Length: 259
Image (tube, rainbow, N blue to C red; front, top):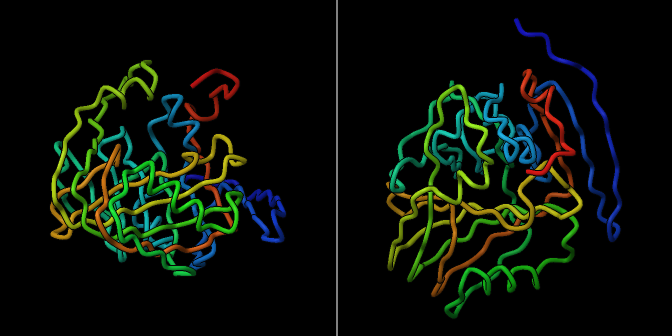
């Protein structure tokens, strides 16, 4: 059995009287905490071409029924909603995700709704993000947001599996060159996380959303959208637990180098 470090570093950051508790650990423990975002891996490491991790999706489910991320080798996008995990493949086609698959990076939580926001007019993705930000008590903690509604337009992408030896091409270049696909007049749910800028390389900064349609048969990483009506269930998450990769690529990674 692979040895896992038991060292845990706990950092408390107090923002607007709402504590952000960050635990960085090399071990996995069950955590049914709706106020905690669990990060498997590091988005900064993924951005610097660390495409493999050790956490299985079965383990990840112990930390959240609301999730987004990717699988090892960036083989498609992942989305988790109501306890079910899905892989989003080519052209947005959705299939059930296997618990044995591993992830280099994912965010998960148990969504508990603290606030509901209604959308009663058409908003672009940028306008929707601005509106939601105006409804938050602070931008310095995490939020999980379930955005459900009718979308007159959705533009998305997925990721194409890489094979070893992985290319040295930057992740940003790879993701920007992935095929995109568009949908019109669809009822969908956006699994969305907001991460504060202070978190640095650990998570995707600001808003990050993956969508799944009402029939659970297509979705993708949201690039743009227009919502005509809907509601947003928001869960406040001032706590963070991180399980960093434990492989040679991550151990040798130089975070001082650009993404």
